[in-house]
Length: 142
Image (cartoon, rainbow, N blue to C red):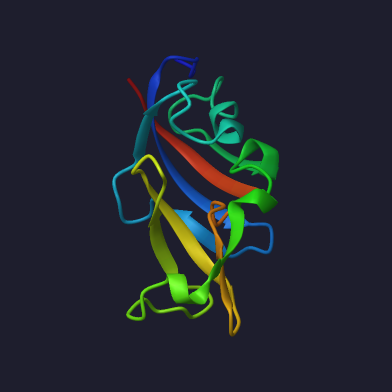
């Protein structure tokens, strides 16, 4: 039976949960996720869990934050003057906004704190600093 090795194109069905059991993503009801193993297209902890699996194999993988979306980076949080944000932009905590970097790249941020003078924006990935668990099923090796 063929087993996954680095460089193979594979397709998996998956459900990603936080350690408290809440689901943050799943391929349920969608096509399987297809990618090249070892190419950096998915988080490192999931990439290294696939070699050795065969089509039809199922596995549960726990992935620490360092091998998922990385640790929370305090430098990715920034308080900006409230008057520097256009009045038509909603500023409730939890609102997702898009900023532009100095080189013109779009960068998603989340409003994490609002007071009279400032709005604190967080550009960390929403899953940064979190340990994750994935239930995976290998559907195809191409």
